[in-house]
Structures are given as structure tokens and as C-alpha cells.
Length: 193
Image (cartoon, rainbow, N blue to C red; front, side):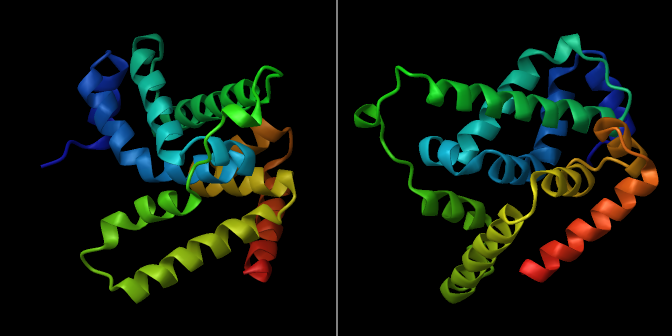
């Protein structure tokens, strides 16, 4: 039987590494999706999404004692803020002048798709897996067509699980403005799809 979320958060706030690990495992699919959408093509060409997500999880575990969890929204905010810092750090690393293309090895982008779909192999046929891979590419392509502010509001609402009020606070907008922006962003995303 899995422990309830409030209990996990309480244990995690007391420095229980096992509780933090359990919370990370529960949020890992959303974290991977967030990293895939926020990292950008340049970074994902150099590092795998799974490696980036694993590095974020390691940072969260290493720094768990410094953070006091107030609830799931605070944990999610901390997790995704850590992911954004990791992405920025890795982009800065790869954009440094000392990095040369002749020293780099390319990452197989389809390997990431295969990894994302690996859990479904037992229930999907090869043709269904190909359809799922195409759908993944289609969704990511449509998301990439959104303006950065619209991408941000969709990520905050749908992956980070922030309320309209929390998003408004982060973006310096009213709750009503966030609702309208999210509605328009989702409509545009649907149009691109």
C-alpha cells in the first residue's frame, strides 16, 4: 500500500530521503516531459532527457535537507525550478567558447523516444508504438510553435500543476489574465495539432 501524499510530504520535510525518493518517482513522468519541452533542441542534441531528469533528481536528493515542504504545489515548484536551473546550467556549459563541435558526440534523438515508449512495449504492437512515437513528435512540434509566454503558462498549469493564482504571481499577471492566456494557448496548441 502506498503512503498518502500528505504523509510523504510530512516525512520529506523532516529530511526522510526515502520519502523524497518516493515523491520524485511519482513526479518523474511530468519531470521528463517538462525537461523534453524546456531543454530545447541544442541541449537535447548533446544530452539525453533521461540524463537531465536523473541529474535533477540527484540535485533534489542532495539538497532535500535544505527545503521545507509545505505541500505538493511547493514540492512541484521546487522540483521544476531545480529542473530549470539544471537546463540553464547545461546550456551555459555547452555554449561556452571552449566547446568545439569536433569534440562532441551526437545523441540519438530516437533513442529518447524509444525510452519514453519502452514501458508500453508489453501492451502495444510495433505499429502502435510507431504511431505513439509520431504522436509524441507531433505534440512536441506543436508545443514548439507556441510563443514562449504561452509555452510557460501551459507548462506551469499542466505539468507543474500550479493554480491560476500561483501562475499569475509568477508571471506578474492577474488570475483572470492567466485563465485567458491559458485558454488561448491551449486553443492554439489544439489548432497546431
